[in-house]
Image (spheres, helix red, strand yellow):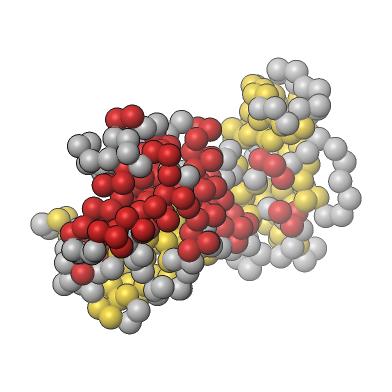
Length: 359
C-alpha cells in the first residue's frame, strides 16, 4: 500500500506551462479522482505519476521516496488506459500475465496469479479467448486484471470507462470501486465525468487550466464549492448563478437584482454595493410554501424536460436563465409565471471580482 505526496509539481512543454505548481497529498488506500474539463492537465498529472511524462520541477513521492527519475517499471505503479491497450495476438490469460512474464516469474506462479485474478473479475470462462472476442466491459476487466496481478502499490486509471455505453459505465464504476475497497490499494482516477468522480471517490481534486481549484470529499465539494468554477462544474444540472449587488438591512444581507431582492438570511461581511453572484442548486427550489428563513424568485416557464422521477424546468428569473429540478407531479405549462422558493441556508454567495465563495 502507499501514500502519494506531490509538491510544487510543474510541467512545461517547451516554453508552454501546463501544470502550475500542483500540491496534493493522497493517503494510503484512498480512491482519489482528478476531475476537470478536457485540457485541464489531469491526464498529464497522472502520466507524470506513472513516469510516462518527465517532471519539469517539483517532486512526486511514493511512501516518502522521491520517484521523479525512476523509470515506469521501477515505480511499482500499474496503469489502466482509456483504450485498454491489450495485445490482440495474446489470449486473456497471456495479456493478464504478461507483466509477470517480463519479470521472469515462474510459470506456475503466473498461472496461479492469473486464475485468482480472473475469478475475482469474473473472467475465468474467458481466459483462452482473444480480445476481439470480448465485449467492451470484458476488455476493461482484462485491462484491470493485468494491473491487479502485479500487486502494485498504486492503481492509476486514465478515463477507463469513456468507451463504454451509459448502462455499462454505471456497472463498471460500481465494480471498480468495490474491487478497490476489497484490495485496499491506493487509486488515482482521471475522469471528465463529474458523476463518476462524485460516486466513486473518497477525495475529489477539481482541476482547471493546470491548477487545483479545490480538494475535498465529494459531498463537501458539492455543498461548499470554493469558487465559481467549482460551483458550475460539479453538479448536474449545473448550479444557477444570478448576478447582483449586495445590500444590508436590519442586520441581514440581501442581493439586489433589478427590482427584485434575494434575502440571504444572514449578514455577509462585504461592503454595500459589492457585486456578488448568488448560487442556487436546481434541486434547492420548490413551488411549495416553506417555513423558516426563505427566499423567492419570480419565474417564467420556457421549457420542461421530464426525466422520470423529476422534471428539469427551464425559464428566466430576475432576467437570468435558470433551471429548477421539480417533482414531475408539479403541474406547469409553458409560459406560466410562478414563484420559486428555497431556504436561505442553501444559498451560495460568491464575490464577483475574485470568484471566491464568501458564504
